[in-house]
Length: 264
Image 1 (cartoon, rainbow, N blue to C red):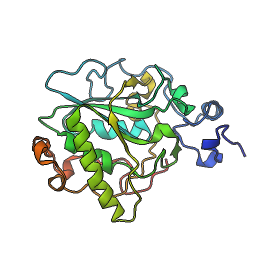
Image 2 (cartoon, one colour):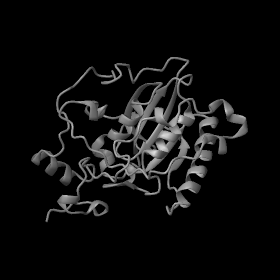
Image 3 (cartoon, rainbow, N blue to C red):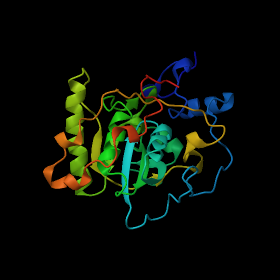
Image 4 (cartoon, one colour):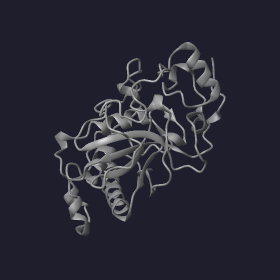
């Protein structure tokens, strides 16, 4: 058998994640046998969202707001958010770590503490931060610690990086409510990190909107629990009622793994 060189990621070939972010040996091997299918040529216009056709690196217009989430492999996480009504643009990147200008290979080594994150720019008149929290919680299993499905490592942890006190308060309140719902159904405590936003380093261009690009492998490692976040009326702080949901549950997109325990 062929093993990864990183003890944290030791596993057989047949159980390896398609995201291949585990070790240099694994990375080189999977590139060689062609399992990655990561685009090697530029697809689309740099800095322009491949699906929404909006800029994702520019400063958002004043009427827009920004949120940052991490829920495992950022390919599937980003796809779910760009499908939300009212989301203007999204981007994937590395955040929550301690080194400057990390690359994909850097975070794969597991020593920078960055998470694979998604930047979400949205119109608060169409979709509220509470709606985004619902989409986030229900799109993965936030009790898995430093992993999500087959993807193992600190870069795959669940996290919410907040912008301002209101987001911090809402994220914390929703976490408490969802944890109670999960534990009532036999799950463990939520391990999701909630912290003020640090620097968001944009990932390489070939990772941006990856799942929408020709030649990409339609991979998903998310493990949604199937348990809904309780109605916001039960946990929304009285002082933050302006963040009440604007969308019905049916208007929010499902993770590509909703209803199943996806491996590939």
